[in-house]
Image (cartoon, rainbow, N blue to C red; front, side, top):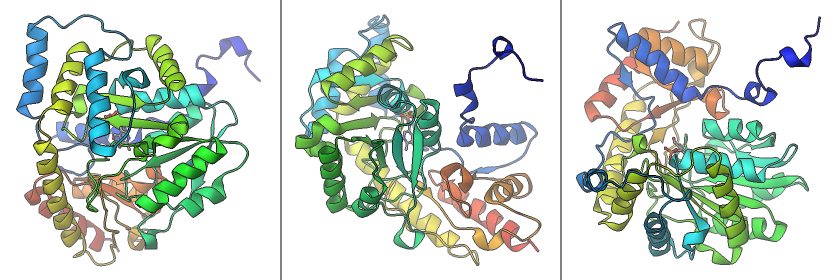
Length: 398
Ligand SMILES: Cc1ncc(COP(=O)(O)O)c(C=O)c1O
C-alpha cells in the first residue's frame, strides 16, 4: 500500500546522498579503538602536523581582544583582502574583496557553489576517481553527474580532450580538483589552459577545487584563477585545512565573479552566517605571514610519499601510480579481490581493518572498484608497520 505523501518523514533530497565514506570509516575505526585495538590509521585526510604557533596565537589574541561577535556574512574585509592578495601573489589572479567569500571550510564553499549554480537535470562533469563529496553534493542539488573516466596507465590524468568529449548542451559545470584526492593526479598547465578556454567559450562554470593547490610535487603550483580573461566562468574553491594544518578550524573560501559571490553570500546568510570570527583572524595570520611552513610541510609530504611508495612496492601484486600532489596513495589491490572470499574493495578494506588493524578507505567511495586510498601523513614507523600488516593480511588470503 502506498503511503500518503504527508506521512513521509524525510525529503527526497536527503535520500539521494550517503554518509561521507571517509567519515564512516573513521567512525568504524573509533569503535574498534574504543575496544582496545591498536590500529595504523591511513584513513584520515589530514596533515599530521600541528597548526603553526603564529596562527594559533592570532586566534587567541583575537579572542582576548573580544573579536567574538558576528562579522559580515562573507567574512570581515581583512580576511577577504588577505585571501585576494595571497592568491594574486602566488598565481597572478585579480579578484577583489567583493568577489571573495570566506566560508566554514572549503566544503561549504563547494556545497554552496553547487547549490546556487546547478539545477535539476543540469549536467556536471566529474573526473574519476573523485573525492567522495563531489558526487553527493551534485546529486543533492538535483544535478546529473557525468563521470569522466581516466586511465590508470596514465596516472589518472585529466585531459582537455576528454573534457571536451564529455561536454553536452546540458553541461552546466566541470569540476577540477588538481592535485586530486584520492589519486594525487594533476592537470598539466597546457591542459588547464585549454580547459579554461573551453569553459569560457561554451559558458560553462569551471569549479576549481584548490584544496591541495600548494601540495603540488611536480615543481610548480598552478591555478586556473591565473587566466583572468575567463574569470566570469571560474569559481576558485580554496581551503586552509591542508595547506596550514588547520582541518578542525573550518576555514575555506570562494573566489568568484561578483554575481556568484553575492549569491554565495545570500545562501550562507541563511545557513551558517559568517564563519567563526576568530578563525578569520587566524586565517589572516596564515595567509599574510611567512609561507615557510607550507614549504616545510610540502617537503615532508614528498619524503613520506616516496617512503610509502617504496614500502607498497614490496607487496607482491599491488601496484600504485605515483601521486604528483596531495597526500594520498591509491594502490590497485585488484589482484587480491576474489581471494579469501573477498568480492570487492569495500570488503577488502573492512577485513583489513578488522583482521589487519589497518584503516584505509575503499575505492568504491571514489568511483573505482580495485583500489584503496591510503593517507600518508603519519610517521615513517607507522607507514612501515601499517604496510607490513597490509602485506601480511593480503598475502595470507587464499
Ligand atoms: C578535494 C577536497 N576538496 C575539499 C575538501 C574540503 O576541505 P575543508 O572543508 O576542510 O576545507 C577536501 C577535504 O578533504 C578535499 O579532499
